[in-house]
Structures are given as C-alpha cells and as structure tokens.
Length: 460
Image (cartoon, rainbow, N blue to C red; front, side):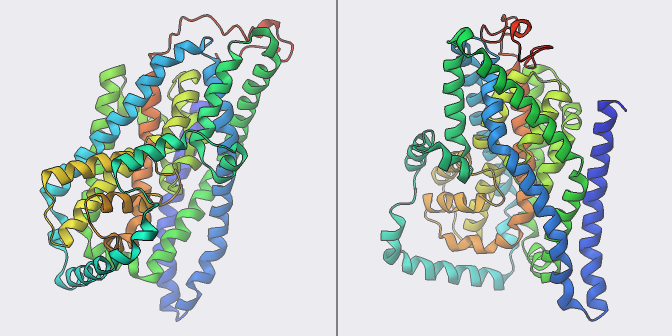
C-alpha cells in the first residue's frame, strides 16, 4: 500500500473514531440514566479516559526530543548560519501578522454580533454581582497581583526573558519549549562553523531526528483508538454532568461568534496568505495535513500534535524539511492565532455581559495584549484561560467574568488549537520559499564520505 493511501486510510479512521466517540458520549449517559444507573457514568468513562491519556502522553513524550533534533536539523540544513536571518525574520513576521489579523477578525465579529446582549437577565445579574464583589476586593489583592503581568510592556518583558533559561533540563521537564528552541538554534549554528570536526555529531542529530519520526509513525497507527478514548471520555463526562449543554444554550451566541471567527481565519485569512505567497491551493494543503488537524482537535494541544504536524507537512504537503524543522516547532510555541482570536472575543463578550462599552482605544489595547498574551501561551489544553486574565486586567475588567465561559472553554479550545496548528503548517510553506534551495550542502554533512550515513543525506 502506498504512503498516500495509508494517509487517506488513517484520516478516514480518525474521522470515524471522532464521530463514534461523540455518539458514545451522547448515547451511553442516556442509556445509563434510563436504566437507573446514572451514578455509573463516571465509572464507565474512567477506563476509556485512561486509553486517551496514554495516547496523549505518548505524543507529549516525543515533543522535547523532537523539538531539539528537528530545529537543529533545520539549522544544519542551511549550511551557513548567516542565511538563517532572512527566513527567521520572515517566520516571525508571519506569526505576528497572522495573529494580529486573527484578533481583528474576532473584534469585528464580536462587535457586529454583540453576543453579550443575548444573555438572559438572571445570568446577567449574577455575573454583574460577581464583578462588583471582585472589584471591592481588588485593593486587598494588589500585593499578590504585583508579580503578574498587566500591560503589553510587562508581557513583552516576560517574553524576552522566556528566550533564555538558566537550566535547560528544568525547561525540558516543564515543557518550556522556547528556551530549548533558542539553544538548539544557537548550538546548531555553532556546529555549522566547525566543519569536519563535528561530522559525527551532526550525523547523529540527523539520524536521531529520522528515528524519532519513525517512532511517531508507529504511535500514529494507534491514533484512532487514542482519539476515540480522548473524545468519548471528555464529551461523555461533560454531557453527563449536565453543565456543558446548559451553558451552551445560555451563551450560544458567544460560542458561535468564536467558532465563526475561527472559521473565517482558518478558511479565508490563512488560505489567502498561503495562496498570496506560494500560489498553492490552500484547501488541498489542508487535506494533506488533515491528520494533524484532526489530532489537534482531539488533543486540544498544539505541542502534543507537533510530531504529527512535522511529519505530515513534510511527507504529505511536500514542504522542505529544512523549513518545517525550523518553522513548525517555533510556531507551536509562539504562533497562536486561534488563541488570540478567542481571547479578544471573550474579553469583549465579558465587557458586554457586564454592561461596559469599551472605547476604540481600549479595544486596541485588547488587540495588542491578546496578540502578545497568545504568543506567551503554552501549547497545552486550556492554556488560554491563564492568559485570558492578562487581557481582562489590561482594560480593567474583572477576571471573575471568566466564570461565564469556563464551562465550555474546553470545547472551544479544540477549535482554536486546530487553527493554531493550521497556521504553523502554512507558515512553514510560506517561509519555505525564502530558503535558498540552490545552496550547496552544508560543509559539515558530506553524506557520501561519512561512514555513519551509508546511503543519502536524510536532510535532503
């Protein structure tokens, strides 16, 4: 069976797994309730959730070693570290531009739809009472809040400090990818200047990267089972508890505003950027990386999806390894289009619920802060709730407003993570053309002469 056919079969299996999981999540609690066994719901879903957690952990296990080896391989493929400058600047420019465009889309939609006006009076009264209580306590909490970022300047300062780590092992253990990426770029850059003296080391890095990709393919064979367990357990538990559907009915306008915004950005804005710079068919590109998008929706983690994103973008979408190995890991850390859009919409929605009209200047602050906060968000499930507090406090909104949306945040998180991953992959395709494909091979990797690489240079 060809690799293309295997990819199509796996995609179909994942789609079937998601649909079956949703069906089980709806039918099983109903059946147990009808049989007078409603208390057994959590007991039944617990073993199912274990299967999903194992799959998620297997993916997360791959993230740190893959980030290190893939970024180093990408830099080594350049040959001359000085040529990293232009692609690197293009990548960062792409990240900032698309994230800011996502925020603009979100702000336009939330102002036009005005979902806060659809909240029933009882919910409005409760939210406003909570806001008043929290505001009365602000003075007593200032000492605790001093260490938390409240402005765009504070966020920018923290982002700069995040580039460096005084303990790489600790950063790896915590999953802080940004300092690992910086170290990998610098270290691999030094290797490109050392020639034959480090040929064995560079060959080892490339071969390790290839071996990790093979391991990822092995893990992905079990993706349909893992994804079924993840989705069934999460949806089933939420539906059984009753809060999810009840909250969704109450704030349906907000939910659809976020989803429509993500759809506009993912299906119009990002494809337009890809076509403008590469003339590639963006929708065919989406099909080529569909496994990564489905995995992102299932896991709600761009970091956990990173191994799949790299493999599919290289093998199925045909983007060069040097671009993918450099751009995608960096993007999974700082390119959070979906998160930024969600935070902007949520902030304005909370202001509408509390009856506060934000001025144009305040909405600009929301746009800038949401962009920077999204860059600093971790690629893990529901990390947006943490950075959401930064966006709210930047315009004087109480963080208690998050309680209005927290019940369905886990569901929206899946949509915004999918958009984040799509942006990463398309970014690699955009930046790819700025790598000089005519460059001679890196002087540190003369494949035919290195004993440890008997066949061909795996980078090319």
